Length: 266
View 1 (cartoon, rainbow, N blue to C red):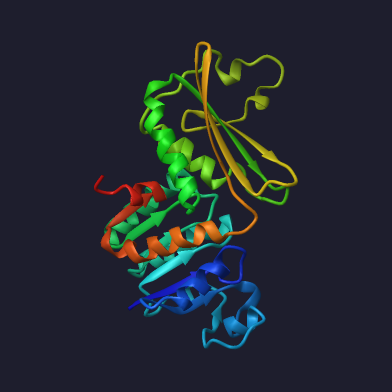
View 2 (view 1 turned 60 degrees about the vertical axis):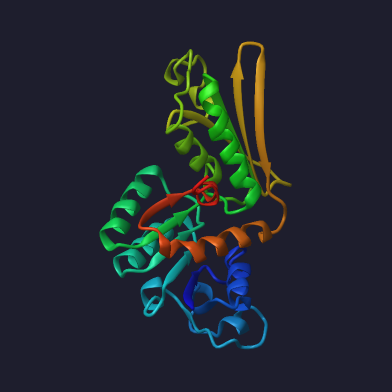
């Protein structure tokens, strides 16, 4: 039985993941972290019957006897939570956005030093994973690309974890050509978006969007657009996260992207 702690267990995505773990026959929800519900029974914090899982305010208080930490908190706490778990020999699944490529280099090194696994994805839904896999497949055949990142007005971080991860992983498979350097743009260079690992990302924050990611590849007289749209619930991320929880202990170091996990050995 794999014992799991969910950080962010009362949040939009963390709650359904914790519920899925509670319902699983091979996983045990041993602990939960939520600053807003600290000290309470998790079930009661959800407005349900008590389930015996007492909520901690900090990851450091919750990971004794835990095999896997699932990290779905805010960008400002995700790195600290992940490193705390790794340093104590706990495997980690990271679904929080806001971490950089440099952060993941540090996480990978720490995980290898501690002999634990980390699986991280900007989006744990199957369709988002396949969008990323498709983009990585076609990138070597195009010289130019840009990414458009759509999200709700309330999303605090930009770009989204999905688009940031996509840009950083695209850089590993193909260069990107800019005829006019961003800093040489006439008018307002910031209108060209943010430069992430060689790709420009444009973040839109508007009503009616949850998270959508669009990568545009282009050559002379033709374009290829690959796009993923998330719905209004976190349900698509649950199955991918639970799959990562089940597999993370078989790895040492960082596995980045649900597509990488799904396509292992193919």
